[in-house]
Image (cartoon, rainbow, N blue to C red):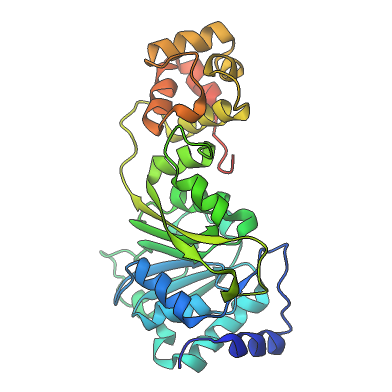
Length: 311
C-alpha cells in the first residue's frame, strides 16, 4: 500500500528523531482512509495543481499524489521538509516528479513567485506561458495558526478556486457560520471576502498521532468575487477589526475610534444604510464594504490602513 499507516508514521518519526510539538501545532494523520476521503472531498484529480501546507510526515501528500495531482508542499520544519521527497520516492516513486517542497513559514509567503514548481510542471513554462500556480489549497493546517495562514494564502495566491482545509472544529464552525449566529466573527467576515465557506465533515481524533484534545473538521471555501465596492480590501478589513474588537457594543460605539468619533461613526453608518444600533455580528461582508466605502474622504481612506489578517 503506497500510503502511510500507523506503524509507518511511528517508524518514520523515530527514524527522523521527530517528536510532535505543540509549538508547531503538529498532529500527524496516520489513517489512509481519512486522507483519501479528504482528497475526494476536495475534488482533486489528475492534473490538478495543489498547495499543501504543513505536510508533516507526508500522509496527505501521498494521497494527493496518488490521485494524480501536482503538489507544492510548504513545511516549516526543516527535518520534515527534507524527508518528504524521500518518503514520496519510497512509497510512490513514479509520482516524485510531481512534488516540490518549500521549507518555509506559510505566513511569510508573499505571492506565487515564492513557490517552487514541481518538475512535472516546470517544463511547461515558456517565454509566453508563465509558470503555473496552484489552483487548490488542500491541507491539515496547524491549529495554532490556521486562521492567519488561511487568510494570508487567500490574499497572496489569488489563483485559488477551491480550498479544503482541516482545522479545529470550533474554528470550522466559526468560519462557516452566517451573520447573526453565535460564533460568527471577524475571521468569518474576512473569509467571505474571498469566497463561500461551508463545513465539509468531521474528522475523528483517533486518526491523529498524537491524539489531539480537540475535535477536527473540514472547511470548504469556493472562491467568489469580492463585493462590488469602491473601498479596498484593507479598508474593509479595518472596519471588520473595529466592529469585532468589542463585540457587545453597538456599531456606533465600536466604530468610534475608526471613524474619529461616535457621531461620525453614526453618520457613516447611516450613509451606508446600516442601523447604528446594530452589532458587527449581524453584518455580512457586503455591509462591511458599504461602511468602508462611506468613508469617502481621501484622508480618511489613507488613515484606514491595512486590516489585520488574524483578528
